[in-house]
Length: 159
Image (cartoon, rainbow, N blue to C red; front, side, top):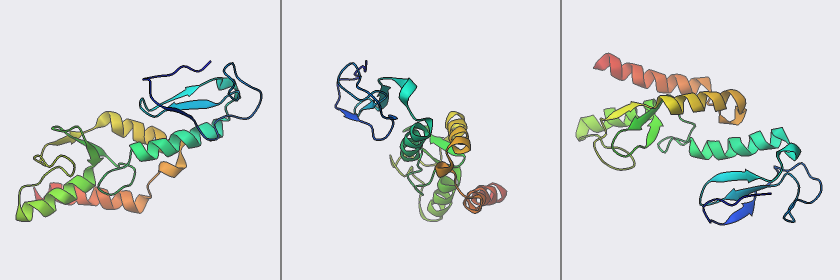
């Protein structure tokens, strides 16, 4: 039996079920409901879910949630802005800060508050590393990661 969370709109999630008979509420066995307001996936019967399809669905959703709003890639070495709680790639923030220091005070790309107050987001770094290891579609290429790391290292060397 599927539960509803948050009272939001529910919709069938594509492709999680492996097919099969009907569920207790007239749904397909193993079908999942996604609550748009609560951002959760609720499963009727986990025994009938195709693991490969589930990982793909989770990976697709994670790619959206873990995207840096500056470069649109999966966050590499995530940092957290302490005022608004937004996270970005450390290299992206460093690059924006270096450019802004030449003409004005750096600001956060989202909230526009002081952009010099970022701390490592260790929890998000761990989540990204785990998902990258298990969902190939989330992995960034080594040249891209190396470029971001070089931006950070050059800024540290200049300081």
